[in-house]
Amino acid sequence: ETGVTQTPRHLVMGMTNKKSLKCEQHLGHNAMYWYKQSAKKPLELMFVYSLEERVENNSVPSRFSPECPNSSHLFLHLHTLQPEDSALYLCASSLNYNEQFFGPGTRLTVL
Amino acid sequence: KQEVTQIPAALSVPEGENLVLNCSFTDSAIYNLQWFRQDPGKGLTSLLLIQSSQREQTSGRLNASLDKSSGRSTLYIAASQPGDSATYLCAFFKAAGNKLTFGGGTRVLVKP
Image 1: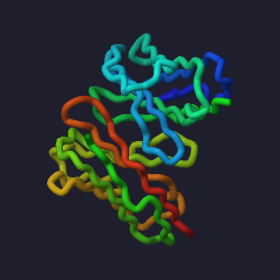
Image 2: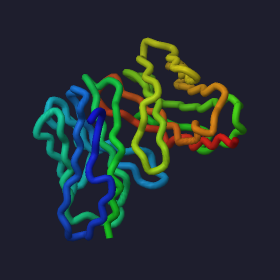
Image 3: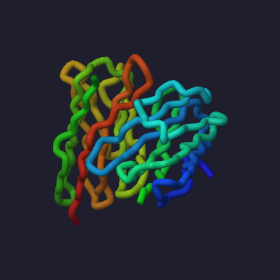
């Protein structure tokens, strides 16, 4: 499989659940990103990882916990979310902070 | 703080008409800019990337220009087709740092 993949594509969870989003890139890139896209709001950068090290945390609440075990994989661990966290979560990757390539996203609904 | 504005927010044109999508930014210290396409409920597809030293990029029916002095970028889509219907987003990579800042997008509908 090529490009950037994300699983699951859809997720419904309660406020007390713990779940994880997964992103995988097959492009040989060295930077990976998590974005949040809410209805009627611009895309918001959440986290940036470069060479598996977090280089940016854009004031994201601690109920979102990223993990980057290697340059090809990125996770977003979720716990005790709020209904307002319902959104499309997008993963992207790039080589040396150049052109970014996005995955299809995970549509998250928090009940 | 870098702000990115896209006007109009929505645009409807008949098939065959040329599309002109505008993007303006407040901070001229940009590393590059990128235009994306997003279909409903889907991820983003990269269309064009313009480095700060370039003035335009072309790919098929698409042409994107960059004018740093006026803080503007324009995406032209020639001879629009119904398949061009989507939301188009512009985003800027800052010179200092690694943050890609997005505009709110322009939702385009091309009517057959």
